[in-house]
Each structure stands twice: as structure tokens, then as C-alpha cells.
Length: 213
Length: 193
Image (tube, rainbow over all chains, first blue to last red; front, side):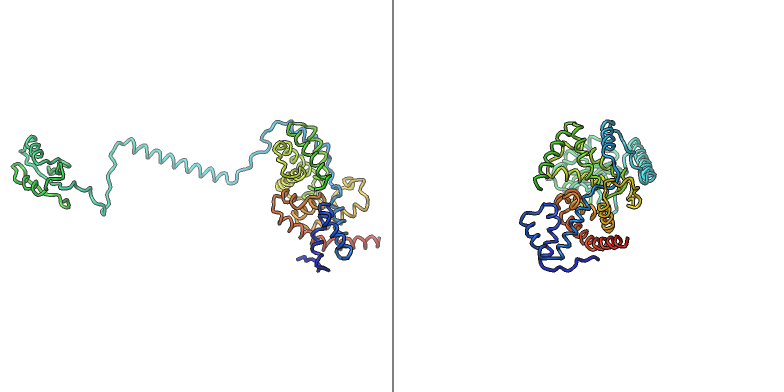
């Protein structure tokens, strides 16, 4: 690693800092005077400053590369007259085949999903209801009673019975002809209703649905 | 910035204003006035004349298009040098860094007016600059060759002033260690001849 030579005085680092700006005439008058005083006393900094002057002179020499200003200017002016076009081809895509393959895979998937969706939509089938074993079945209405009317009971008798007991059918009949009835208003007592149903002719079975109050 | 810099900058701003209205004569004036210093600056990045010309023309192509957008936050010279620096780096990426060695430069390409002393100085400097990184060469050129301040160089290179300071410091230390030895060797060779 290159290291600075040891300074001769504490002022040398400051002198080192100031040198380029004094050479450029960008230092203040005070700074320039301070450096001049320091150089008068410090031989090492005098040598360094002389080296810096030489460096500045060398860096200010005209370039030794042969570039014709007028020819360049004419080319630039000609370029201004050229309509702006896509001068440069678009950069070559890196990994283009991979991108195309991925795009094709996505397209195939999209078509497949679309076809599946169309099939389900056009099928018109009611989607099956799935229920997990831990999931509760649809809760029955409060005070619901399962009733099996006799086959001989007419519809008018059935309706009159429901009306008199203020019941309404909330489900059924199921495969054994059982209806699920529930009180039309919350004030009816399930036990009384149950007793009345059981005592009615034409009612073969009346049982409360377990779990309902 | 001294008075001469102020008046030069005022003249440059006027040229930019004219360029923003489509004045090609103003463009030509600015081009000719900056050509020399841009050549010198860009020759620290590449020694290939065709690349240098391409970069200068790219730089003025951008200056022509953006002349109306110049906000005046910096000197015009700082603005132009910044454009040239970025164009130069882009060209180096495109063309690769293939500097032509000094020994490969044909004799007829060295300016005929170059006195022996200048040629020695150029040779001495070239050997010293070989030891520097590209960034260090650029900073040294901008400070010593073109007279830019630390703030100017930071604007041109789009980096913090502290970074410029560090680059300048390390470049100066390297040159300080190398250049005197080169000068002594040159004197010894002269005496033997």
C-alpha cells in the first residue's frame, strides 16, 4: 500500500490539501498567501508543489489523439437531419426460449381451466353439498316436531290440524312420509303441542327433534 | 469560480438558450469550443479516436435535445462534462476498454507542434497515469486538466464529494510516489544519451 511520506511540520497536510485549488486559482487570497508562506519555509512541500505544477501542465496539454473537430461536427449536423428511428436493434432477449416455453405453459393451463369452467357452468347440475364429519347438520327450528300423518288423512284435515296448533311445515316429507313441523310463533309450548298431536286421529307418530328446546 | 469562468459560463448559457430554439450555429460554436477539452478528458478513458468522436457527438446530440431543460444548477461546462462522462462510460461498455498504447500511436498523429519538452512531459504523465484506476484518472484530469472543483467533479461523476476527495487523495499519493522516480529516470537517460 502506498503511504504518504512523513510530514515535516503540522502545516504540511494543510498545504497538501490546498495545492490543487491554489494552482486552479480557486483558493481564497488568504489561503494562497498562507501556502506561499508555508512553501517559503518547507522544502518538501516546495518540491511537492513543483511536482503539482508539472502535473497540471502535463494534464493541460492538448490531447494527442487525432480527432478532427470539423469532420465530427459535420457528422453531428448530418445526424440532426436524420429522422429519429430505432437506430439500434432491440437487445437480444436473454433466455428467450425459456420465456416462450413458460408463456406456452401458462396458455395451456388457462385454456384447460376455461374449458373446465365452461363444462361445470353448462352442466346445470346442482353442486353436491359436502359436509365434514365434525360439522353440525343444519340446525332444526326451535321446537320442531317430526310428524308422520296417516295415509288416510286428507290434505284439508292436515291443514286444519296445523292451523289449530299454529304449526307450519319446515321440512319433509322424507322417504318415510315424515314432516318436520315447527310452531309458527315462539309462545307455543312444545310439550302441549306434542300431546295434542299424539291425541289427534290420523297422526301415526309425533316426536320432538332431539336437541331442540 | 473566477471572473473569466463567470463570463465563459454566461456565454455558454447564451449558446444553450439559442440551441433550445434550434439555432445550429450556436451548436457549432459550442461544439468547437468544447472539442479540445472533451478530447483531452475522454483520452483518459480511451485512446481510440473513433470512440472519442462518437462520444463527443453523442454528448452534443444530448445537449442539443436537452438544451431547453438546462436548469442552471451548475456551470454549463460541468453539465457538458457530466454528459460526456456518462456517454464515455457507455461507449466503454459497448466497445470494451481497448486502449491504444502510446507506442502504437503513429508519428503523424502526434501534433506536429508538440515540442520535445511537451512530448517528454506527456510520456512522463502517461506512465504515471497507468498506475491509476479509471476513476482516479478522471478525477485528476477534471481537477488538474480542466480546473473543476470538488463539487463540480462530484456533479459530473454523480457521486458524493467525499468519494471524489478520496479518489483524488489516493491518485495524488500514487503519483507522488511514482512521478519523481520517472522524472529522475528520464534525466538519467538524457545524460547517458
